Length: 333
Image (cartoon, helix red, strand yellow):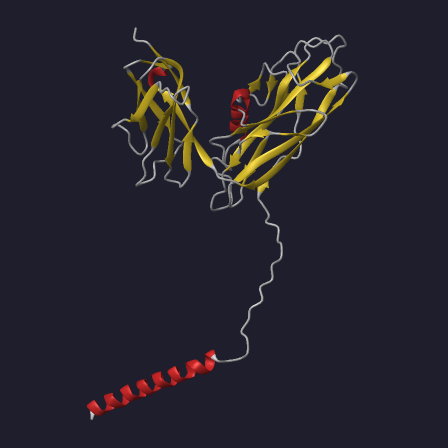
């Protein structure tokens, strides 16, 4: 009896399968169309970016000290910023930053200059907008730390610049802010300092008055971009050159908490001063680890502008790339 029961079950399954097979042609032959209408509508995506609305700039002809706080002083700057200016990204994507600047002078006899204004006899202002990467700055960075970092900025390190004029000028350079973290907060690489720097007439024929000055409007733009982390290279022992046939060691300073991603290999590259001449060579040193990247640089030919660069993928998924490190190759002593 149990055997017969199983046959009946099998017959029922078979009958069901046949019924489904018979139903397929009828479904396919349905003359009524089956359609889906998709409607596209533009919806602006809101980017989470923090940009200050105002800033304080001081015309300081003699570069006198300006205090940011009790511990931090800026001196030697003829155009001085009274407090750090910072833009930061909390968006879910990395953002490429652009900027246009336009200025307006006020007072008697004040005018903008395209070049160094220090020795001008008229009241001239050579103001330059500058933006800088801000490594180490996060949502948790304290104001005192920002002051100290801001005071150490150097014009040569600016990555986005524009001369302030009475007409709108587009900043040149490349600045990308890293995306915000999982909580929507600014993380390392997601912030940048900006400031006005430059020179003014130190001893104009008509002295500066408290009614003299200028305003600058900076219009930032943001669009999705590819963030590349920075890594710093330096020759060990403070060296700046290598002898022909000799070697020196170059080390990379990795950002805090970053390792080389598992399964990847850092890439060391070198370039000469021309396409046909290579002045030095570089290769990974066996002592390298995922937290300490070391290269051995060998002098090949006497020259003045051999360079070494490094690129690797970090454990945080970010590509890191160094600026070229210039190394002079000299004859053996």
